[in-house]
Length: 210
Image 1 (cartoon, one colour):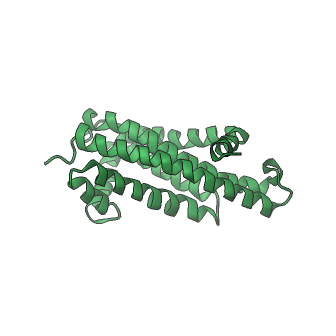
Image 2: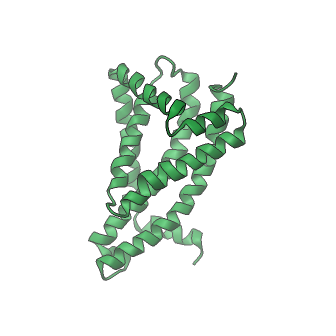
Image 3: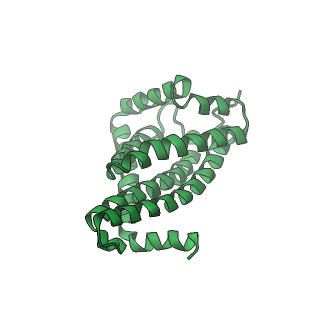
């Protein structure tokens, strides 16, 4: 069985879990948008934190890459940050010890996205928000798949028979192997998302034009 067929088989076996993960992640974005709508000061506060991260925090190398005006440099740094920090460090690796961790952190991330990037207020104009919605959709779906892979590890521990295994250890290891396969798909989607995000921030929203 080829890799593509194996990945498709993972989704087909746990389609309801995948849909539920989507609903929770993107639902949290909706909740965040409602918070920003009724409490505009929360949007300003979250954007201030993001601005600090871009200036001197973990996102500063990404900001510097965008400052060059090069789509390829900006896309590379966006992809590297989203894969290494946004996926592996923040979701996947901790979930090897506690699988639900990815869902908790993922929904917290999407909640902050909803607060910061959905409601047009202040500096967040429609010119900035509308093109960025596709970025949130693409990269958000990559994170959903990463979270889904981690949740299946809990499934393997609790209900190993669902994965065709007779023991909890076998079920867990089966899910870990599947998770690694899913990370290949996550990587591809993050590449697409990074290229689009670099394009839209540099040339559509024009946030980094001198």
